Length: 537
Image (cartoon, rainbow, N blue to C red; front, side, top):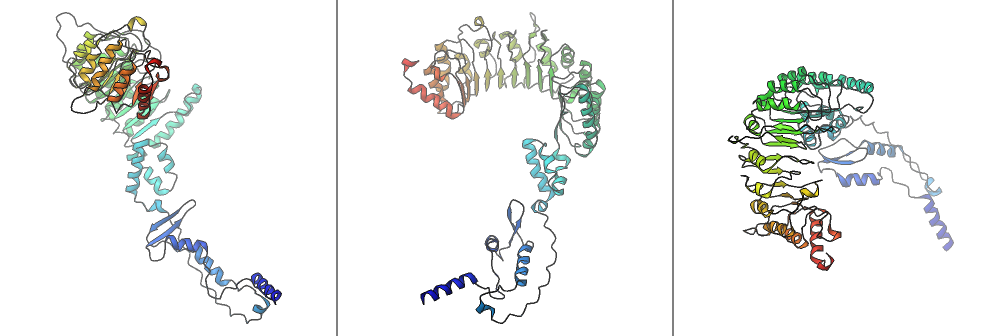
């Protein structure tokens, strides 16, 4: 009997269970489908290549499930055991009517209104620029292409031939090919262009500027970097066609002074920002500025190029104050600057009442003294940034006499100076006692102040009144005689300090002579200073 029961169980196992007629067998896919979007929930599922989206509304029918049900209905019952085969066969059911063909779903990208899609693209463009995002987004679908083609998104563009480093003949061909594309892009994409940068254009600058003048009336900023062949006609035409153009950057480009002067004479009353590279032709451009052709100029930067010009720059301070009274930023970078003497009995100029940033940084010795600095800043009470790196003739007493009371950034670092220019100095407490409540960045790198002088200067940050903490977040003491106790005191008093440079500080332990970036590294330095015994210094 036991053998017979075992054989019966094996027979039933091999035969399997025959599904009843008319009963639908649910698959795992059907179970998950109903689990995520059950009927009556007001949601439906949309399946793509790499994701499954749950969207509101009654979506398209599940064609795959319908086809599976139709196939199961057409399938005959499986042949069972001999006992099951002897049962009468069920009458075949009529074939179901074919399901109507469904229109393919357009996808969620097409359901977003065009205005909202343009706003989303605008946020990405504002953060990372139009390229390469807009070029890639235009390949997704027709709706995205329509949104990426809106001229309002193409307000900042940089154009550079990809073969700028190839031989001259190949570069000319590439520039002509790119110019042919710009003939369509300018009127169709760049009609609302506001900022344009041209880099490494050697032969086709004039045609490009002509297209810009014809198709970009809203252009406000133009930068030409390492461009050759910029003519007077091109710049004057651009000044007449683009009535909103107020910023011009010509650094590291070969442009004749006559072309720049003609441009300033045409667009001077509306010019706000100007960047130049110092050369033998810069004097003519500065003469136009001194004559008052740009009375609304706010930013003026003159820097040296790769091939340094050894001829000193003659700049009359008082004439510049009269010609550009609205100047807010003045940068004379790495120049051998020789201000014209004011002469005896000559009154001071009107100054720069709106000046907020003055940068006279240089890697070599210059002729900026306390007297020259006073002529520049005697009428600038709103100064926020003063960069005098390399100006070894400036003393703390001269800085203390400046009229600005809320200086935020002071850079006095001496880089590459000889030992005779970095002798011991006194007077650093005059700087911190005047500006300790507003200074955010202080650079004393290479200054020869004594240990006691630095201790008194940095002690000003620990004596703030009212329980408020100093605003100092960057301190550069590279190459100074600062002591461990002075460093620990200033770090403890400035909880917002994020940058601390202690490289080449002779009085500090070797393991701590480096730059610290970030709050964690600065606090680690403080812990090491507090725990290291003085005998190891």
